[in-house]
Image 1 (spheres, one colour):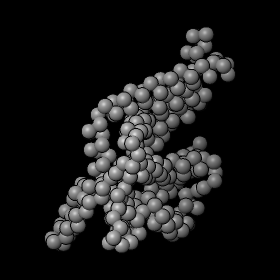
Image 2 (image 1 turned 30 degrees about the vertical axis):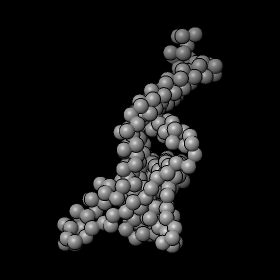
Image 3 (image 1 turned 90 degrees about the horizontal axis):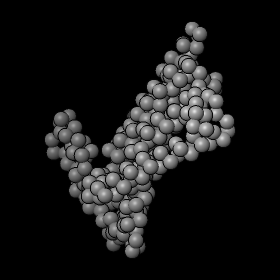
Image 4 (image 1 turned 135 degrees about the vertical axis):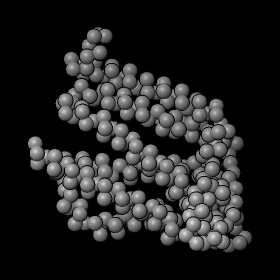
Length: 269
């Protein structure tokens, strides 16, 4: 049985299930180890997670420096304070646990991709196996770019706008910790997924659904759609809209070149 498990080419359906079960246990083990480490490093973890909620976050300092370089020497971002609260007795503890698990999955994602590649690689042709490793690396790199985009741009600006917005001076905002973490997690996954646009375009090109010519012809429509999506996921602020729309449109242009390169390679085959 051990020889069968080691040789995925000769595995039966039950053998594949056994291999997948072993992979699942290893992945859960790695996630658990990272999650426990994150849980124990409470001060460092929450210092990083709560940093975007501070008025002197690094993004705002960079904006001030850029504005001063272009001549606006008196430009300063107004100081603000938003209180984070816990309304239930166990909410802080439970949020700490769920956040540690989430960060455990995020930290273990390279290993998860590696195990998935090992599982499916025996079923791939030699040329597919050769390209699958770079594609996997690109997928993970794009996901990380989306995570950083959310952490340094989208979430801090969204938190600043929504946290300080009030309908009356008599109403003061106090954001629950659950709401903070939930919004942060949702936007992180959203941006990580949106940044997969070049990979999705490559897949659609291989299926013959889209072409570089089609994508080029709909540039203006794509720009309007990107700005619409950015307007939905960001506060109604022009600067935020521009900061989110620019990288998304750059990804669209990259997608056009990815489709064009695939088409040229297909012609030479």
